[in-house]
Length: 67
Image (cartoon, rainbow, N blue to C red; front, side, top):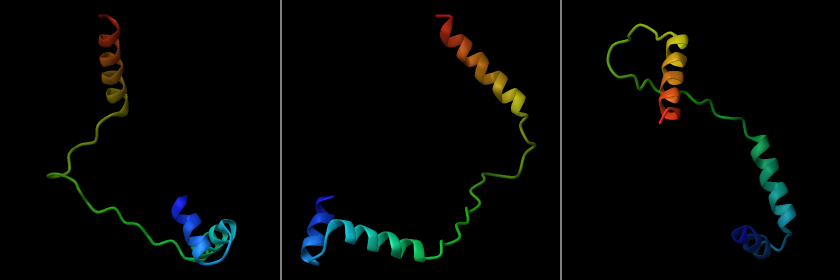
């Protein structure tokens, strides 16, 4: 915020106008497409059943509460 205030003072404008200008410029730009690169390790494997995952998580939680 301090940098923004200094920049506004140097440009002889208000902080509000500086922020509005930046917001308008940002909204004018088309968003760039983001593509997640393949970061898999090894060959594809069979998918894991979500029910099995939830069951394993529940079992771990139960183990924490029995101490």
